Length: 112
Length: 112
Length: 112
Ligand SMILES: Nc1ncnc2c1ncn2[C@@H]1O[C@H](COP(=O)(O)OP(=O)(O)OP(=O)(O)O)[C@@H](O)[C@H]1O
Ligand SMILES: Nc1ncnc2c1ncn2[C@@H]1O[C@H](COP(=O)(O)OP(=O)(O)OP(=O)(O)O)[C@@H](O)[C@H]1O
Ligand SMILES: Nc1ncnc2c1ncn2[C@@H]1O[C@H](COP(=O)(O)OP(=O)(O)OP(=O)(O)O)[C@@H](O)[C@H]1O
Ligand SMILES: [Mg+2]
Ligand SMILES: [Mg+2]
Ligand SMILES: [Mg+2]
Image (cartoon, rainbow over all chains, first blue to last red; front, top):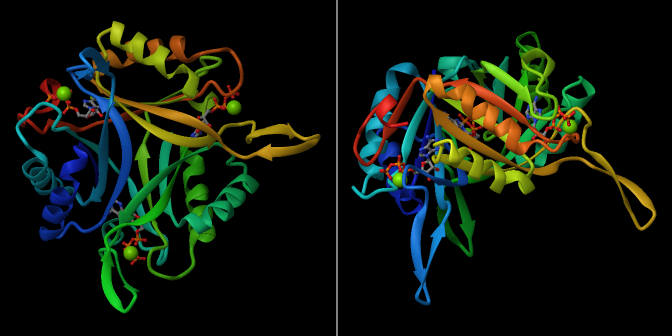
């Protein structure tokens, strides 16, 4: 199994969730995060002053999927989260060794 | 080492923590999350109207343990987090390559 | 690639971020968490009563780096997050199999 962690714009969450669900990926977990990428935050203007905003609010969408479904889920997230502007986010894929559904005790492929 | 990520009902946190501590697992990290599983959220009634609640508040309990302790910790979480109803949660296990205790610089088995 | 998860004192965040940035690690994600370590929380006094605070607020700093940069980033976090007192935090390193920059579709080394 794989864990897909996608850091996306908060404004794109609904589109990402809907696109994933349309493709059969209904299960997911969402975490409020803050972050910065290669631009090291952004310069903003306020009352004529420039100041640097260090980190921006993002959402991390986490989904655990079977190996053969990972690339499809990644493609869906890329398409639905992209605006084409800097700050669109990143996707990270990590290996998962075990999955358990707490209610039933089901494991791995049956529990994902 | 392994990272155990357990997404559980908020109402079960105290029971999960106490059961883990009784078995010697005192160290853990807790993250506020929202999520949905295979039921894609729930239908609720409010003033006679039905509406779908997309994601529900959950808690993610993260604990890093030595390899030989992982199955014991998983069993404890399953027993203490289970109500038998849908939405009881999921456990994911990921490999961990390195652990460092910041105060002492201790590594791996000594730092977990 | 590696995922470095560092649970640190909230009061150390700015120092950790600045030290990482000085060494070229500008990209990171921050998560608000609560946790406890081997001391199982702390005993506090309030109006003459002792009570146990179960978990303390911490920040989890997550950064995905190329393999050859992981040890440098870990050393920087240890130096900048350490006070020498209990509760300084922990660093966990996990393997990452894939990275995608959503804006460009760039992968792995080019996307970190
Ligand atoms: N290497 C990384 N490690 C941890 N988090 C990251 C990393 N890169 C990006 N992120 C997270 O993703 C969010 C969005 O990053 P962002 O899209 O700005 O990446 P980028 O590399 O700067 O690409 P772009 O040039 O398209 O902006 C950041 O705010 C941060 O939370
Ligand atoms: N595949 C998954 N990927 C990421 N998060 C998940 C996944 N499955 C479940 N979760 C998280 O666990 C929480 C609880 O899931 P839940 O117990 O409803 O799983 P389920 O598969 O629907 O099982 P059940 O039929 O017992 O309800 C979700 O709200 C979500 O945060
Ligand atoms: N094994 C672990 N699994 C998950 N989270 C952990 C683990 N150990 C520590 N943490 C997280 O790191 C935070 C800080 O831990 P802490 O520095 O107190 O570790 P410690 O092992 O007790 O070391 P020290 O003796 O220096 O206090 C905890 O509040 C918790 O969020
Ligand atoms: Mg950027
Ligand atoms: Mg469910
Ligand atoms: Mg401690």
